[in-house]
Length: 529
Image (tube, rainbow, N blue to C red; front, side, top):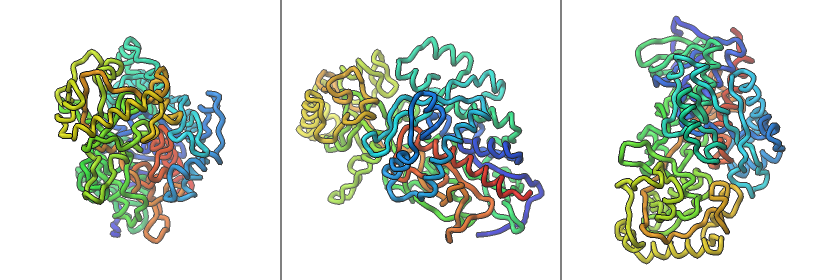
């Protein structure tokens, strides 16, 4: 670890990264009267937080109570430990559960954001301690009204209509979508980031956009010297690393993740900067080498890659590998399906499911929008299409008898409503993502009406898991397990309380934003300036 002399421009705190965690840390720091600057490598702020659902998994919150749902934090802890496995530190898990609801209270009192509990179960509803309604989402946020000419500073996702999760599930109201787009009313992750950004601007947070940090080093007399890519240099008494993981950095992916070709769904830089800065300051690593996985379809027509979720749970579809066999329960959370794509076969020495196919028929396409293609639209050229299952197998270079067997087994399962191979549709969460009107199992349907379709699927990363070792206050730890003065990390830069699992919708953002608030509180408590 190298120390340097202080730069002339000294500020209290710097937050590197402008996703939901970074914005929350900055807002909480200003709440304590600490001057703070956010540095964002991209021109637009918000990172991956802005393009996703914006859900936060927070047990025992006020929005849950308002919705009439009860919770028990001891039960939530038991469930979280089952989800995460033995990896995360118990103190960090307890801190998240103890302060998560208070974090929501802080955001609702210090921003124009309000949150609603989504009426859905946790991702593993049969596991001890699982709950209902723990996933929260921001209510629609009037970015045009609140942000004015600064609305364009904050990232949006043009592929997501400005509807809440509940509204989207009820059916897309195109008149409401058009009205909200005209008024720049945002929902989901775009609402979360815009609401936090508006509060930060109101609170006097300085924003530096469009320039990356090239170096962070401790200063001999205390604090940190931050050098920007454009040569500017200044000092901060405390630094919060919230720059995301390394999902979009091919070199770090090759070094730290299974050797398959991942498609990154992360927005912004996501190049592992925060992890490298922490290592330069003597930090230890913990829980690294994992990710928020998913099944991804990558169109060839210029559209962005799709995280495939509901298409896998609706009746009448299935995933097969290059052998023509199903290999995973398609209907649980996308992280579990993503892990299924990483199955390794030592006999052949390969990740034999990393190239897979989503199989469905004409009836499925007539009932549902598939990967952004509405029923009335023609199938893209990348999709394989055939008049029989045998012909489809030939197009995919799959043994025809194996694909035919997989279709036969799915059709038999659909008839009785029980998937003996993988248990698809066996719990409340899976059925929630299926078609509640379809019986006997909302997730199992026959594949029998030509033409038959196959869409290529590959492993994707919404972000990476693990990184810098942190304590329950998000303070970075060195290789001896001691706290590094003035250095904090949250979000995908740091280890996660989710371990290798995924508790429910918002399992990445909920803990990230909570730890951001805790980091700010720890900085304020330790402040001697």
